Image 1: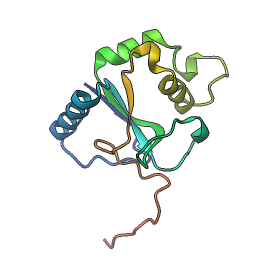
Image 2: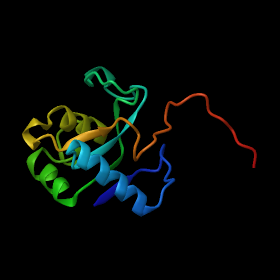
Image 3: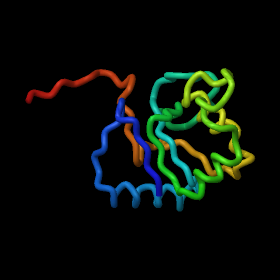
Length: 133
């Protein structure tokens, strides 16, 4: 299992074993072999995202987890990430959104953590509460 976080707007608040167990629970329920963080407000290409029943419905490519074999499939089936592509993609998030919207060729292995079972993205969350030190 591979876990990637960018650390900009996500915190790790569980042990590695708990994170793996949570991922396997989601995988067993949904079949998603790659799970990507979701955020509450559309930070990028929000109008492209499909309707969701959960409030956390916009893809945030700063955090993702999945089976190494699924990432191998992902990176050998779809065009390479942005730094290797023409200017069609402005960011990695743009590329991930395209992959998310076009996963039928991947057998639906790619999903959002819309219930925040593994990731809790804090970007665009208000109010910000300051805790005394």
